[in-house]
Structures are given as C-alpha cells and as structure tokens.
Length: 278
Image (cartoon, rainbow, N blue to C red; front, side, top):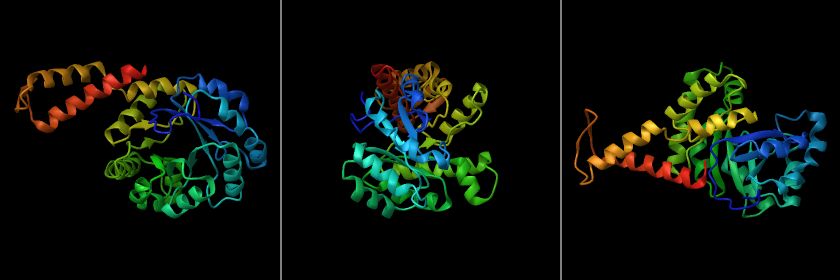
C-alpha cells in the first residue's frame, strides 16, 4: 500500500518519525508500523522547522499510509506547513490541538475536499468539541495526547484523567460511526511491561489502537490490540453454543444476545486481521 493509496484505512499502531530526520523514514516504514506520521511539530526544534518541511517529499515514496503532523493552528508555522503539504499533494494530515470544526473546514478549503484528518485531542476545548470533531466529514480518527492535555489542565497526567478523556473520545467516535480513538504514546520506550499495561488500560477505556514513538513499540501495540487466542476460543464456544440465538450457560456464565454479538465481532476481527496479515 502506498502512502497515497486508499484513504479508508484504520491503523492500530502509527509510528511518529521526526521530519528533520529523513534517514529514519524508510526504517520507520519497515518497522512493522501500520502507518507513519512524519512529525513537523513536537519532534522538531523551532530552528529546524524549515529544513524539516523540505523533507516531506519523501512521504510520497513510503509503502505505508503516511500522515504529516503539522504545527498547530495557533503557531507561526501552520500556514507554511499547509502550503507545503498542499504543494506535494499529501492527503493525510494529523492536526494537533484540534478544537473546532471551523478550523477543519478552513483546512479543507485550503487543501481540497479529498483530505483525511487525524484530529489530536490535547486540550480541554478539544475534549469538549470531540463530538463535533468526530462527526466532521473529513476526520477519519480521533487520537489522544495525554501530556499536552494534562499540561492544558495544569494537573498531572494521572491514569484517572487519561481514562476519563479516552472514554469520552470513544463514545464520541462510536456515536459518529467512526473507528475507536487512538491512545497517546508510551514514553517508556524500553519498558515493554509498562507498554503492555498501557495498552490494556487503553483497551479497557475504549481505544482502538495506540500511537508509537519508537519502532520497538509497534509490534507490541499491534499484538495487544488483536484478539488473543484465548478470547477467540471463548468467542467460538459462545457462537457454537448459541447457534439458535437463545440465552444459555457457557463456561458457567449466562450469555445472551449482546454477548453473542460481541463474540461474533471478535471472530470477525480475528478473521480480518488474519486476511490482512497483521
């Protein structure tokens, strides 16, 4: 799949790569990530922004679906970032600090009607506007930025705070008929146990994937968001036991129509991932 292929794609483990490190682009592309986010924002120092922007043409050669995280709309680099993206015909945009549908409408007017936006929710205003952002016709995914969110609120990035925000984003996404949101990245790059814990928490709170900041994280994230063999065996037992749709006991627990539907959805996810080679 090319970077400019089918826009209707739902990544689980997008990997950020700094836009001022073009020698890392192909490595990121081969990392096992299912999407790449070339980052013009947090990963690039102010003095390096112009040089980083000149590297965006490499996005056209990458195999994976590729987004560009531009600088936020309140920055001095926003307009220049949009111009560079538009000149290259790049169609996937990651917008930091997304807070209103109006800014998305303005992006569409500048870049064209065929763009796809990943809206990063990183402020209180963004969380309040999550429903409108998710319902916007050019938003394909919401994602959460816990560090900036906590900074905006002026409080520590506690598990309770992250859980509250993620569950609200999950509800907004589901209500808009879009994929579940992406959780923010784990900053403990070498701690796989911590990453596994964060992935499980994200799943429990309604996330459909997790942003990555290091190639070593991608395979762990993709694995964590796949149904486990144990889950698939349970789902198959439920479906086998309830072929007539009636409620009954499975593994000592009563199952009814919603549980049966959940089991069928798990099996469908497993088949989909197998067919995609995930």
